[in-house]
Length: 495
Image (cartoon, rainbow, N blue to C red):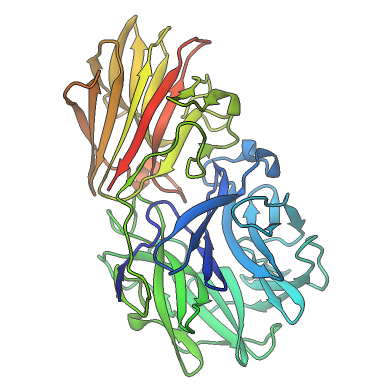
């Protein structure tokens, strides 16, 4: 049966997956955004629904310190004896584990694991739990390191031992994202090498003993897009294996749909590939990521065409920058109220008033119906296309020199803002996205749309060293205390 990648579109990097009976659970990285680590559920591997978030309470982790590209890196999800375990790195805090008997909610406070490195992973094997990261030893050589742990407390129960040094000739090789699987007669150690850009890859080694020594797969890298330029898929790497209920094997991995060389404004997305075994080694048809695949599925893939959230609650799909000031978001039966914040969306610290979703696809439309009556100069609210505090567009209603304007702006001194004076009334902001551009439209009091302007998608130079992808949403900010409020009556995505 045919299906299309990515299976999770938009900013969903570093996927990890596990199966429990007929159910599959998948998590991805969220970096500086809260809530952290979305949990997706599927019964067929190609149709996924977000059911919750592992980091659902601000007090679980110190998000107020999360700069752009920091925060939560590379989670791994595993299941053992009735409980789900997710481990990840919070930059500046350490490697941690959270656990829950219900993956949709009720995740524990994090327990720290005193091992350095990033991209931690757990394997439960023979009544023991083992933990691996890319921690280096005294010689400072790139390596994968392993220790036995208590997964509920984070306590280390053995020495920390380096077990593999990778199989890439690149220097630095960026050896990371390790996972270990006990399959039949071997322990398989799978990792990413080459960095998360155009040279990304998955490499593999195996051993009869979890502690090694490990022999490298003769066909490494087993998955990469580094040799395909230009291509419709780039940056393939950082994967996790799962066996389905029918005995077939699969790999979820990150990749991009590039718009300039290997970079994509959509960010790194989650792809799915069927996996086979040759000479007791994992392998993939063609050894590279694909958009269109034919594989032994049992359900047809469906595409979400439209999404509109409830206004009476804050649904788990919304993302906030760092720890949100919850008092600034007031759900209601008819509209959601956003209180403008003096913390700007360009600030590198603090909690701006901003609700975002992952851009749902390259070609899509996102609209918001809202009412906003500015009180003072600097009162501003509307929509944003946002990658980081150094790379975003705003499409908003702004009071300036005593007048109200619809403004398209970019946090770039070379960009000349577009101003259109606007009358009072209910506004509908509409953003139409394509591979190369965003087109901005607005309507007043339900009248015909007015085209406000067109801008190019955000590029790698806009985003800087950025591990996230484009998010779209609403914001409200001010220069001084104001009584102005943004009332959001509707928010709709269409693909």
